[in-house]
Image (cartoon, rainbow, N blue to C red; front, top):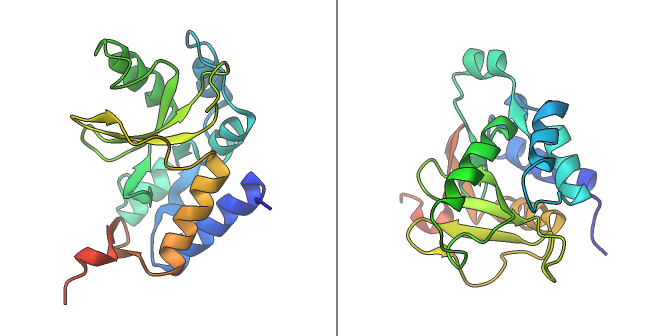
Length: 183
């Protein structure tokens, strides 16, 4: 049985803290108006679990980030949480690519690798994969089907990745897959 969003998110935040990551100390809720802006995007229906995610970790506490010298620390999938206020701009930019095979409409970014790589969630309520989480790779787009069937499964897998030492934090803000660990 799958955990609730709160259980899965708390599990990941606990694993992040245990791994020495600073992200649990600097993440903050998105403002209600930022979430409302996502609701207003054409063709987008936010899954309830994604809305709840943003309400807990859709932004950063800038004062804590400054105090801890933590600018956009890794959260999951080797990426940082994309601030909810930046999501509409990143999404609208993707629509100008014009290739729905590369970045399908209503696939909303919520994690960013800092370049052109994103983790996206399917917010097309008419899709059979509504709520599924995908890797969007710069140059390749959405590929290989969903990484996880939903956001809770993604968070649970990300926590297992840390618990099983398949990902580690080289610094409090930067994680790597264990296959890249220096010996």
